[in-house]
Length: 321
Image (tube, rainbow, N blue to C red; front, side, top):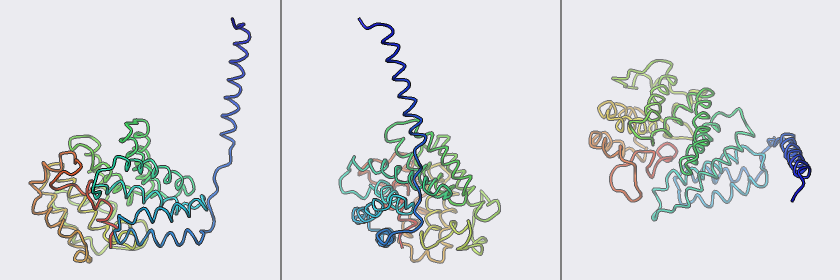
């Protein structure tokens, strides 16, 4: 029989070691962000952007190889870390493109979250990274039914909105578009889309007649409000925003207002060049019929209309040239 003093000594030793371990972890030096970007990172950037802007979903593995390789050469590069995360989340977001459903694609949520976590740590002042981190935490939390991670994602979304509302109100609302139509989170996400319009124009947009024509003169490529309009990163951001918001209104049952919101995309000077213009035209025509379709959770191989969030153009509606 073990002597009581021996047990006490063993417990004390274990506690001491645990305490030392905690201190050692706390005292570990933080990663240092790189001051310059490597040639490999710059070359990977070119492939990243061409793959994204050309909508080459099948090119994601090649782009990931180059981008991940550049990150491993320089793990202090926040831009490269974010690009790796973005490629993983794109593959997951548009997995409806896959000929055969692949359960392993859910691992992309884990990897995306890890790389955006690195990007946030390396550049904590970049609120767009925080918004993407939150979105991936919510995705991973939902997949693994991890309520703690889900709550972390939700409150990071809120922090991202506070830091950069023009950008993260859309990010947050888009993520919530996948929630049940009668849920508090979905209603909050839709409210964030309205709020996004307000902060982008500096006024309260009419909820009953949300015609954006009178605000088009506010378009800019500078400052925080640049993300409200089309730009090099997201050539059809404006059109994609109204496609998603219209979808959310349809899902809520308000298909009449949805038609007006969808129509705002036509005010874009590049609407005619937008690959998904026919999708939007069909949405306007089928708005009432899509109320029931959008309220149902999308299933692999399911026929019929899908909301932008669950579609084959979940990212491309904004980013494809």
